[in-house]
Amino acid sequence: LQYANERQQFGRPIGKFQAIQHQLAVMSEHVFAARMAAQLGCSAGHDGMGVVPDRLRVATAKARCSEAALVVSELAHAIHGAIGFTEEYDLQLFTRRLHAWRQTAGSEAYWYGVAGEALLHHQGMTLDIVRRITDVDTVL
Figure 1: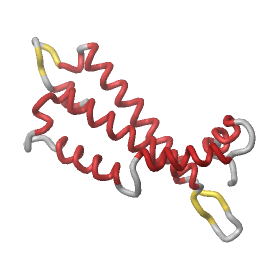
Figure 2: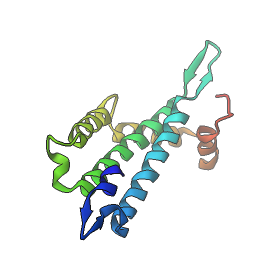
Figure 3: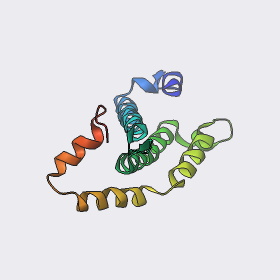
């Protein structure tokens, strides 16, 4: 956002162009969706032995955050253009870390598989399981 408001093209900041504003909006949507998924993934339940994270919530959170990291880094580089790959900008460092973190503890495909397995073994409506993993007040 800072770069888009500082970088001038045709006499005005590139952040004033509709295409850049759209890319920033999409980035924002992914960041906030990932943040919510991470918060839900970190909310824990009780298994009788103590507090433990719910595997399906963790799977959903990890997959969503990894997906968001890919889209956000792609859009950030599109906004920065070729300069985002240079040593002068930390964007290249952030992108490398994001891609490394995406693979840590399993890729999106692995966690989507965990979520898919849970859906296949669930008895009842799919909406019930979606409600269960997205309801913050639910004690698992």
